[in-house]
Amino acid sequence: MAAVRECLILAAGNGSRIASMSGGVPKPLVPLFGVPLLEHILLASQAAGINRFVIVVGYRADLIRSWFASRAFADMSITLIENRDYHKANGVSALAAKDEFRSHFLMLMADHVFEPKTAQALLQQPLAEDEILLAVDQKLDRIFDSDDATKVKREGTHIVDIGKDLARYDALDTGMFLCSPALFTSLESTKKEGNCSLSDGMRRLARDRKLRAFDVGDAHWQDVDTPEAFAHTEEIFAREFPENPVTEWLANV
Image 1 (cartoon, one colour):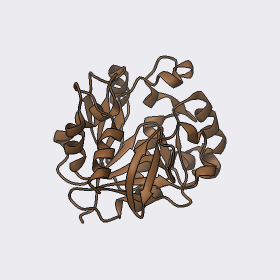
Image 2 (image 1 turned 135 degrees about the vertical axis):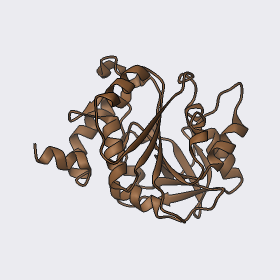
Image 3 (image 1 turned 45 degrees about the vertical axis):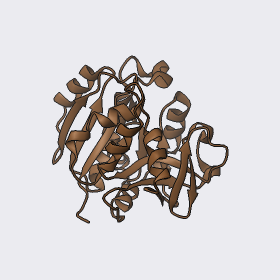
């Protein structure tokens, strides 16, 4: 498989659960140690080997466009796509970018911070032309606010069910996917009245045995979607994300 150098970042949501501390800016621009969450994602992905980014924006897209206009990201190609239906489920945002990808790509959420080595390991995994590989975490007792996380049920390396409300599960969705364009075919097939979630598409792939799990092992990641999760991330960041480019930058400030 050729090296994967492209990444889709979903950054369209209105971030209602973090609105109390966002000051009206879209969640991707909420600063963590003075650096917007979206920049954390871009720099960590670049450190993992990504150089082309397609970012789907929606809520206050004008502010994100202005932020990019004021910033220079060396050795990155960045394309912004606006999803005017950002109030719908996140699968709609993914579909907005379907014409941008012809081969395998990394898919990330704009509010999930991670270690570059985790993404790098995921990118090196084999993937068939009609499969999706989801990075999962089986350290259930170490995840902050695991009740809110998307749950995963596995049989061997295959994922057989996924969703926030699963009663029986053995791992959690980290928000990191190695995708083939089959993602878009699955999402299109699950659309109802123009709406679909990523989990809808993943469940369809799971039924077809086309959704596999990649265990992140001892790696760290964090979904920063509430004020409580934000405070937790601030507390653990230097300790659990020592190789993140932002951590290295902070150490030299």
